[in-house]
Structure formats: structure tokens, C-alpha cells
Amino acid sequence: MSSTQLQHEGFIPFRGYKVWYKMVGAEQSLKRLPLICLHGGPGATHDYLEPLEDLAQAGRPIILYDQLGNGNSDQPHDPSLWSINLFVEELQTICRTLKLDRFHLLGQSWGGMLAMEFVTGKPPRSPISLVLANSLSNTAQWVEEARRLRAGLPEELRRVLEAREKCATCGDAALYEKAMTFFYRRHLCRTDPWPQCLLRTFRKMAQNSEVYNVLWGSSEFHVTGKLRDWDIRDRLHAIELPTLIMSGHHDEATPAIAQVLHDGIRGSQWVIFEHSSHMPHLEETDRFLEVLDNFLCATESSRP
Image (cartoon, rainbow, N blue to C red):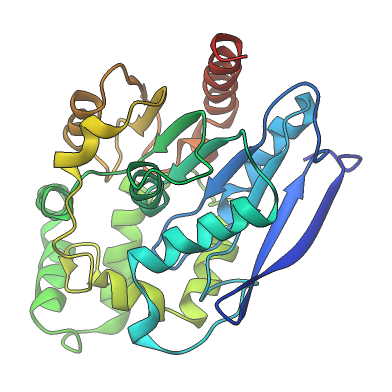
């Protein structure tokens, strides 16, 4: 991000807690509408989405925030608190507090799940477009595809992951970490080394993994949390916004997963990044930003 780019940070009250946000670029832009960016996880932080801030250089305000329970936001320890409805309400509160009447909405991975729940709920403040980056329509397919990708790992590492799925405390912890790192470097982010913004997100998740554990579970391959039966396929037809779907060729959100979204959302566009996995905004940043900006500008031109 340009060092001269305007930005400010603040906190938004929500259910007796504080949610941290950052806006990069002028609040009232005469050129482009704001873009709200929803991070993944569940339970990650905004840090790894920082390359999206570069869109502000062309006059588009970019809004990032840490969902409650993580990063710079308050981190109450209450497993009963975490639910999709909570995070939908949180997003509604952010839109209302920042007085956002016309905006774009981007959700990355879990953020895409949250974005779809938000727009299908017919919120009073609805975006004019939707961007689903590396996201999914149902948990069952995600698990099926994750296990298929795991089957392509070296046998030693595959056995370690399979054993840990059966027993969360079994096996060599260091070897398990090695196996997960191998999987992530193949299907999460293929840059070498990983960008500092991604490393910051992982460090913060390691400090507090409650939201991830409660909503998702013990690993990418074994979903035991509240999202284990999540499925929005029967509501995809209700999404009538201009929608851009983006995924990576090596993505853990595989082409088969993205295909369901594309087929279910009438008129959606789908772009595959051939040299990327789950984070093309980090792996093919320039092309990602170009595709995204073109879509947002085209939407604004068709909806003055």
C-alpha cells in the first residue's frame, strides 16, 4: 500500500464488545464505491487480505475488519457465542455504523460463506455486487475434496494426517505440523516464502483458535464444529446480485467446489487463477486486483 494513502482505524460497538476496523482511502469517494472485505477462517484476521488495500490508490475505499473473537477485536471466551447469525449481525452493524448504503462485498473462504448468508438474508443495507473468493457452498463437499487432495500427498504424511483425524492427541506433533505445512504450501498458498501478512494471520490464529475450533473443528479434513452441516445450495438461486467467483487451480476450494457456486448463482462470472491455490490475491496479486477492479467498475457502470 502506498505510504501516502489515507487510512484510519477505529472500533465499532457490538453486543457489548468492540469490533476493530480499518478504512483505507477517502470515506466519501467520488470515483468508486467502497469494498468491504470479509476474512476467512473462521477465526482468522484481516492481515492476509492487506494486498486488497492497493485498490484504494485508484479512489476506492477499502474496509477491512477483524471479526469478533480474533485479531484487534475483543476476544471473549464463550463457545456458545459463536454462530453464523452472530457474524451476520456483526456485518449488519458495521454497515449501519459506517452508513454504507451502496457498496461491494467480498468474502474470502469462510468470508464467502458469511457473505452469502448475509445477502440471502435480504439485509436492509445490501451490496450492489458480490465477490466470492475461494469459497464453498456446503461443508460436506469441502471435506470430500479435502480428503481427495490429502490422498495425493506423500504416503508418510498422509498417514500422519489420517491418524490425527481419528485421535486428536495421537502421533508425533512435529510430524503432524510438517504434514499440514506440506498440504498448506500445496493447496493454501504456494508462494515461497509466505508473505508476512499471511504469517501474521497464522500467528494470531495460533494464539486464540476458539472461533475456528467451535465453528469448524480440529482440522480441514475433519469438521466437528457448528458448520459441519452447513449447506447453502438451495438458496444460491436467491442471489441476484452481479457475482464474481474466483478460485485457484490448486485451491483447496477446488474447481469442483467453485463449479457448484457458478452453476447455482445465475449470471455469475468465474475466473480460475492457474498458478494459485487458496490465496490468489497473494500468489497472483497483480492479476487478481486487475480482475477484481474490472468487475467492480463494470458493475458500477451498469448500476449508476
